[in-house]
Length: 267
Image 1: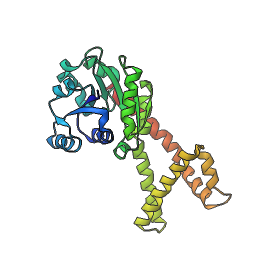
Image 2: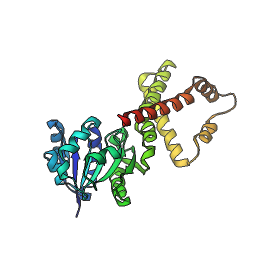
Image 3: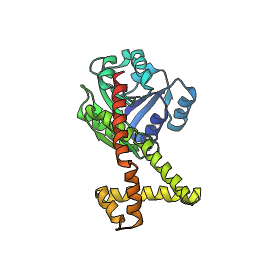
Image 4: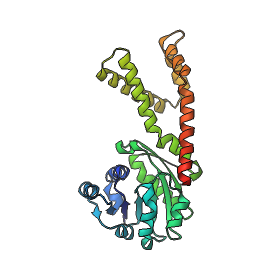
């Protein structure tokens, strides 16, 4: 019998997950949702045939509950629904920065907890998510969540000790990629190309380069060398990027984001 699914918090990430899940509706039974924003609840009801209910009913009626409220609201939501949780429930948290131990403290003993760090490309089915299990979560629980998340992209199972690094890389990473794309497009404009042509060329260049990395399995340095001829245009451009500190900037950005994730998790 398909598991019933509950969602506490109907934000963009929960919407992205439901988009993926809804592509295979036979995988789940009833879907229960709660959000204080009535418009968001109506959206889920209209698009996914979800049933708008109170937080208590979401937990009571569901086998798998996705906790997708803002991090500052997790404690409040878990305390308000505490009587409905038990060892038969699988709690899937996508609240950024909230550690498994903090969730387990708020829920009754025995509740199976899986923490997820998704990213925004889930919205287009190309997400990169990492998951980690709590004390009561089994390998089967992790695999259940992995299958669910693979509807919206790549999902890997990790130890929670690596979650801050994952947050800095794939969680924050889309913003880094957007900044690179923005700078690249601006540079193309500066070279005299129109806005439309600059955007088309840059996006396709990035897309094609990623596809080459995926299909070849080669290290980026090897593919870079294949484009770079002695005394040519590419080496001149690469030299300028290195002189501008691009590589070190990425090292520093990831480390800074990781440290900030650690700080937020300690709050």
